[in-house]
Each structure stands twice: as C-alpha cells, then as structure tokens.
Length: 141
Image (cartoon, rainbow, N blue to C red; front, side, top):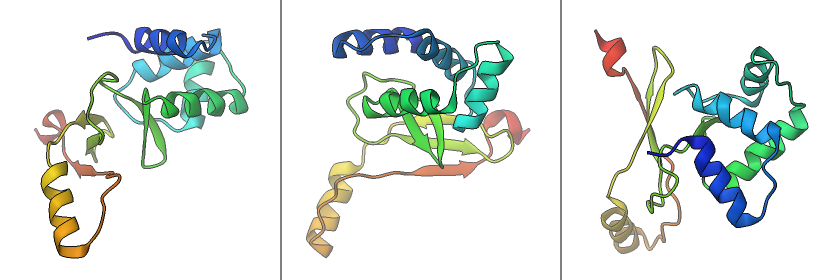
C-alpha cells in the first residue's frame, strides 16, 4: 500500500495543486498515528517536529484533503484514509475507547439498506456515516 504522502502527492499533481512543505509536514503527522487528530493536535505534532504551521493554513490543507477523500472527519477529528483509491462511498471506523485508535473498514450493505429505506419509508439514501466504538485487539487483553 502507498504511503499517505505519495497519495497526497499524486492527487495534488492531478489537481494541479502545489505541494507545499506545510502539506508534506501535515502528511507526516497524520501518517504517524492511527488516532484521529484535532487540528490543534496536528499543530502540536508539527511543533514537536519543529515544523510549525499557522492554524489557518492547517485548516485550509485539511479541508483540501477532505474534499478529495484523502482524509476523513471522525467525531470532529481528522484521520487519513487508509485506501484513498477505494471506490466505496462510505467509510466507517472501528474506534477503540481505550487507546483512541481508529481503523477504517468497508462494509457492503448500501444496496440492501437503500432498497429497504426506499421501499418502507420512501427515503433516498445519499450518505452514511458510521463509527463503531469498543475495544481493539490490543486493549482487550
């Protein structure tokens, strides 16, 4: 699997967006953890590697990442997409309540749920956001 920074570089190149040092450094912070991070935590991570970036720039870069599916918002925090090229429309997460790690999972249920909602409620499903909270393998023991 590609490193996150490689996916960002390829996507930015296709969009003809400039890949700045701030963007690369935010990639490194996001790639260094499995935990969703707030913008403030990303800023603190940048400070730790002596690559400070102002909060406005951090939010601008994160918004760009989210807009192209490289990063997801999970409970108000940012986490890199584990498989940006994946065609799944919904991205779901297993979130450990002990260590706060999050693992992206892909579930194939959209057609069955969408059909049921349309039939029973006349509802057209457009988007689903799910996170499952519990204990990961490492924290269970």
